[in-house]
Length: 265
Image 1 (cartoon, helix red, strand yellow):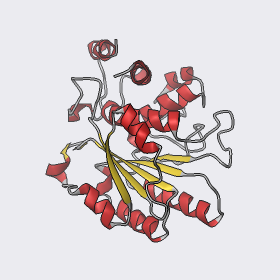
Image 2 (cartoon, rainbow, N blue to C red):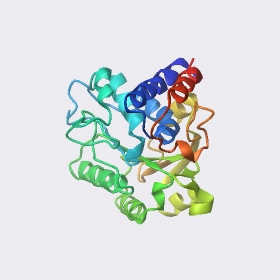
Image 3 (cartoon, helix red, strand yellow):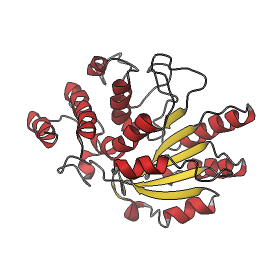
Image 4 (cartoon, rainbow, N blue to C red):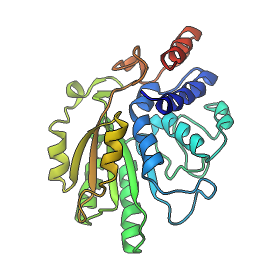
């Protein structure tokens, strides 16, 4: 793990330290994906968050918002110090991101399965208006148990939304256990292909591979794209990796915080 990935993770730990709670596991499986999207792909202006030609990013797995907050602060959408109010009374930074409160947040997400339908609407509107911006959405793997995800996928394919890219954070775990025990998703790539998407798979923590793949998007000019990112829940913190106890944790102790920081030295 390079120094930039450690820095963004350290920001997440700083956020958690204030109220001693948060979704560490889901944030750590997605943070490298967000890093590369915001460093190398998305077009945006932090000083003008509603710039009409910006690319739209929707965090469909809203509980993974700590990674998004870390990256948005790093890019200058707001001051990092503002994150000290995470989950405090009247804070704009809650456990799920809210559009209209937080600069850079395009959709309020939390109820799973809603982000992709919203993103399909954004992409279709751009197509109708002949606008050139792209729409990127990040879903969780447990989230795609939701039927609304697949309804939206059918619509995206029907309208040939090549301006839509779906990244699946495929960490193989839901909040209560492994995907294959709760609702098996395999063969996952074949599912997205059968729904009319161009599909690629990638290591969601390999920065070079992610950058190389992003340089080739869209994969096809008449299809939406689905990128299956193989990730590790809790990546970067050995005690949390693949551990459902760290999907969300409250009352985090001083010893646990100290161990988080040690992992990032």
